[in-house]
Length: 196
Image (cartoon, rainbow, N blue to C red; front, top):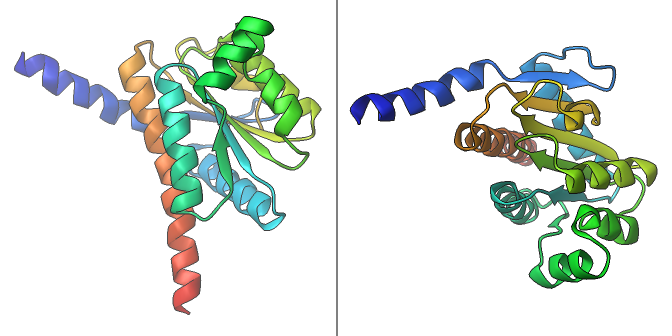
């Protein structure tokens, strides 16, 4: 049991060193440059009076809800997550689960917003459709994915964070850490500006 526990945390530690970040041209950005680009995108979005939209399924939905709340509460950046139970069940029942994010994005997202699309596999049809709609509406997209390196979500964003692992837990933990790193860096920079 002790080996399993140690192995788990060693895996998460190693994954944080092996995150692959690409841009729109699929060329590597390097992790720090990818974080800087995402932070610049988010702060510019906020200055324009636009918002962040988070989407995800299962645990990624939990990360989406948590981060949307933290971005507006702690970062004072307008952020929402399309994870309301009535919305999800309505769109799923009346239109189809593959469009559960696509339809709200079509209705409520404005050009200049940023979609943060989170999918461990990078293959979830509803996340892919949501990202496509966001791009069609003139939004920037940031993706977080894992599992197969050729997953389709990994090539859809201006910044794509890919965690090279095939188990949900470690991928989700690292995705959550990336989101917190983005927010905490933005908050820290804002606090330093206020202190001057």
